[in-house]
Image (cartoon, rainbow over all chains, first blue to last red; front, side, top):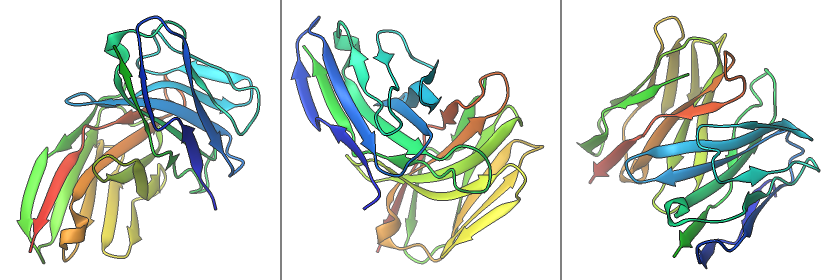
Length: 115
Length: 114
């Protein structure tokens, strides 16, 4: 089954404790990206990757790191989480380029609470 | 930088009505525009993708149009049903100064009552 898998689904942590949220896709997609969703602010892109070893900042990259060493995985790293990073996080992937195959597939989300 | 606006923010209609959701964007340099559906507590599901060279796409009771020059898209839902209740978001993929970045609107929360 084609899917984007995020883990964990829920995470409660404390300020300053490094954490990683994993994202994996099985569709051989070139494009992968991370978003956070906050009430009243909508969905905002954190980082995106057009292909392996190619990453770019989105709207709100501060406090986050990513890496794209393999095509299928795109982990999101919070080196020193702070309470303002409490949010619902989504990973998504798609094909690049034209041709109508660029539909974005989303993971189920990770609800992060930083105390 | 793109700004994406969706109007209305919320909509409540009786079952069976045809309805239109609106999305506008500020920069016409886009690869594509997508419409998504989000149910509470869930991820987003892509409903329709319109490439920059296209004018519209259809899937079942859904029809999305794109007027790139005026920076507008509409999602038309025919014969609405209670199961259509969800938040609908549009997003553009930039091909301008922020190549490859996606910009989302804040969504229209739709309620269809029986």
